[in-house]
Image (cartoon, rainbow, N blue to C red):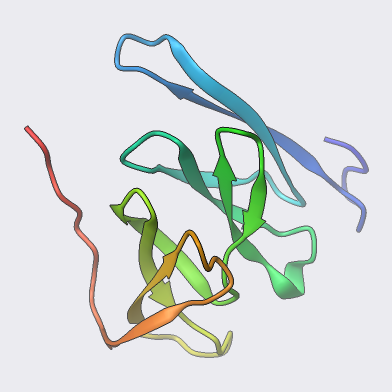
Length: 131
């Protein structure tokens, strides 16, 4: 942590993606005002969604982090719940910070990370299980 307790506080959070046997596939570091948390690994293992790029707390965003180290802000108001497939993130959207929900399900495509698409109805993403 640098600048602890000040408006310039920054926390560097290591992210390590590992195989089932514990060997590391890749790693990176994300930075936030508070420690970024809640990673969701893409099914192909090439990207992680993680909350939050909160260096500007009034304009916080989920992050899409690639194996290549590239970090992209996701659409404002999008909250991550998981992945539909390796290129589509699913969650909810709330563009009104005063709203208490329930919030509509939504998705963001990796090729348009700044666009959130509302499904128009509330619900929860439960995911799929592969055997």
